Amino acid sequence: MRRLLAVVALSGGVIATVYLATSADVTDLAPNRWATCSVRISEECQADYPTLKPYETLRFPVRRNVEADGGITFVVPRASDKVRGGARDCVEVVAWSDCTLDPANAYPNITTVWSAANPFTRVRSASSHVIPDCRSPDGGWDDNHAPVDCLRRTEDGGTRWAGCNIIRRSEASGTQCLDSPTGVVFAGERLEESL
Image (tube, rainbow, N blue to C red):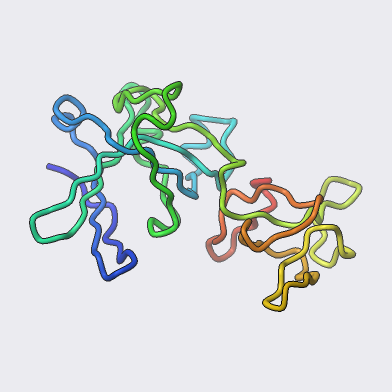
């Protein structure tokens, strides 16, 4: 039986349901889209995959189906059981409605094998968010950093310093922006641990 991961309201009032693939899905269904999403990685998953940070932008294969009632179903991959459920159970999509979908043939060099030990590919530069480079000389993060060349565009066509805050890439301007793996951080967590 599939495990329900999320119910998402998409634009136009379309409801999408997101399920974790079962063993039968892995055998019987081929992915037909690539999803690029901001995700949160649990501590267990970081232990299994030490190169991953608490927040990442990942690309992975999905199966997208339009149902008879007009709703949309997404089936997302699972890792093989050999990985203690690592990637299967500890990659949490932050906002499904903020994911981008591409055709299955858009990234031919990335594995489309759902049962691969790690069907997720890290694509930090594909994130739709950036953050000003507010690193301090000692490598820490300075929330009160002096303005750097990473500004938010204003409605009148100008730009302004918005502090050391996440900015949508489409609204950012400047040469000192860092790729931000997400636009939302859970309460009590700090984005700079993922930069």
